[in-house]
Image (tube, rainbow, N blue to C red; front, side, top):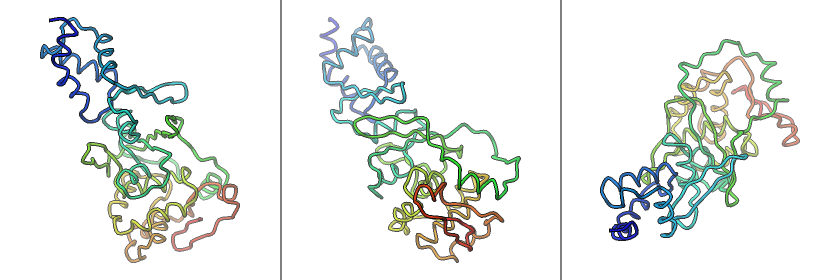
Length: 291
């Protein structure tokens, strides 16, 4: 039986392999499936990758390419329209997950920033995060009043959507959950911490409050506390989180653990507020936060 005839005979089964999760496939994925089909004698043993790929194109395989500052990430699917969230979730391997507002939106918790897709992949495990230098107030003041926010160097665009690739600190993917369709996302609690740490991707601190205020009953302050503890940032994010959580609607009595971790330093919700918003910082004495 010839190449074309054998492929056609088993076409239904072959195409079915490409209509399973995650629906988007790399060249490596396609090559792996080709080899598996050969082992089952469902396609000719001497069928080349190019010939196999072209047969899939003939059957309607579509190409989707994301441009990232001169480099490209290409995936293939029989889906006609690009599902950005599913596409994003597989771009950087099995440890990739949707984060921040993208995760919240994927879970049906917000529709904020649906033009931006945040994709995270944690850094490798470097052991316990220790800090050799002692943080001083003048360093914090300079960093937040004058310093420039650090944006990702990996940003791509496709179909009017901006893809932002982030590399958060290692936490063994604490608070990353797997949805029914297999997509990994940050939990609502992890998303909250991600967003207060990466406030520069949002307008002002009030944006975070506005997003999470309607979600207060879904937040778990113990999980939030634990995640910040694991990250062990040199900056005092416990008092930052406590400030936000009170603004969202939690009582001070519920936030004792956060209050107990308030440092002897004053901290900030965001950098360069005076320039960005045109207003000077206010100060919250209880949480020792400029906002």
